Length: 159
Image 1 (cartoon, rainbow, N blue to C red):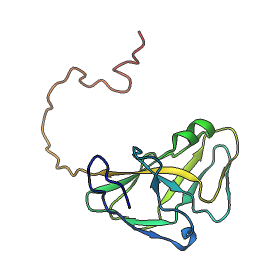
Image 2: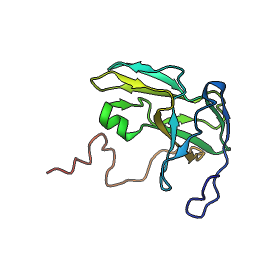
Image 3: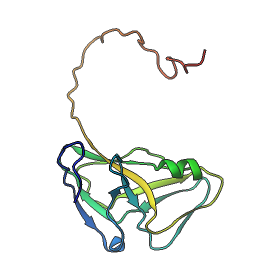
Image 4: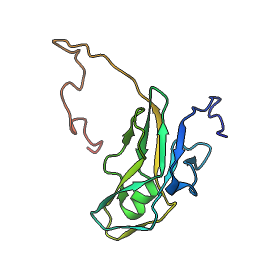
């Protein structure tokens, strides 16, 4: 049973564990203060990811998010630092109306072959609210100190 965070009642997310993930754990928070749930690989045999190669790794899970929420799929910092394993579309978005198997696109930017084992923690999932907007088309925008400066216009902080 999830522990309330900061006095909040946990959000309920329906999940289906597919047959090829029957023996794997559901995503869990590694610590009480963790923002992301650890997603694990539901591969039937190890996957070897060569440098420069990408692969879609199954999780064996299907979910039904509540209306107004998304699941953000983010990389694990340890895999990025130690092995150069990143998620090229990070953060990946799982929309509230998607009902297929969750998959994680992994890319090896390192120099060595990387082995993905069954049950290995491969990514983090963060549940986030989604705001809906309406456009207010206008002829001008209010001025700011930054103005139209972009792509490095605010500097690097180094004189």
